[in-house]
Amino acid sequence: MSDPTRPVGPKIIAIANQKGGVGKTTTSINLAAALAEEGLSILLVDLDPQGNASTGIGVEPTEREYTSYELLLEDVPLKDVIRKTETEGVYVVPATVDLSSADIELYSTEKRSFLLHDALRQPAMDDFGFDYILIDCPPSLNLLTVNAMVAAHSVLVPLQSEFFALEGLSQLMLTVREVRETANSALRIEGIVLTMYDARNNLSLQVEEDARDNLGDLVFQTVIPRNVRVSEAPSFAMPVTSYDGMSKGAQAYRALARELIKKNSKLAA
Image (cartoon, rainbow, N blue to C red; front, side, top):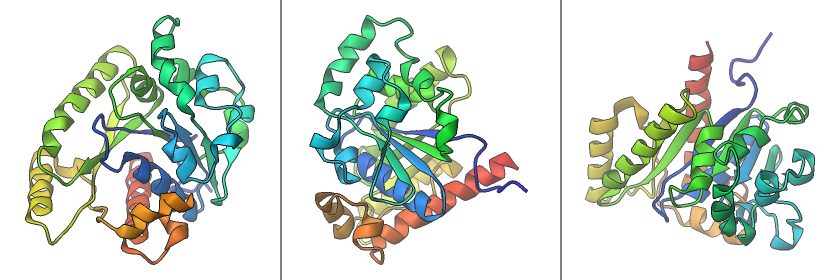
């Protein structure tokens, strides 16, 4: 009997926001770890030239022989690029600064928007048995982010609980609409997750109210609090669920993972 919590084939989610510092990479790492705690197999694809998701999940720069750059532009097989991490159930396609030139190189490449789509659908992918693939996008709406959206089934948007947060969202939504119209008609918004949330702060409460009024059910019920343990964990090269599993940040990412699984179970039913 099939397990309704498991998507059919890997569910591919691009985690994107063109604004930096909103908790995008933090959400990528910790959501991957929290989903893995639920018994799922997760691939984290680092598509940001800063390589912070790779570092934060414990892959040192010296250990990144093959990266997302080689996967996209040099046809290196998946089996050579995917690395197991210290976090049980989480694998990673790491990134290095080499990826910073990829955007320019992609422009001269045929099917430049479909390279990640095709790479993640190699027959070898079935051998890994991933349940979810999370793509950590760069903080811009460039060709790398477009590649992620063309490859993905949905887009998850971390939204910082701060002034002007919703204004930046409109540009991202326009990009999603353009990708849907030109390259990936099935792309949808997985949801908006409020990050760096402080319930004692009137601004956080106002941003949440505005987001829920304007976006309704697209906004996850789970909010990610501003939490020192979440901030500290990357410097120890581990997700917050491993660094301090009892912290409010770890509990929030576990709640987000369960909410994501429940939402996708309903869609699959």
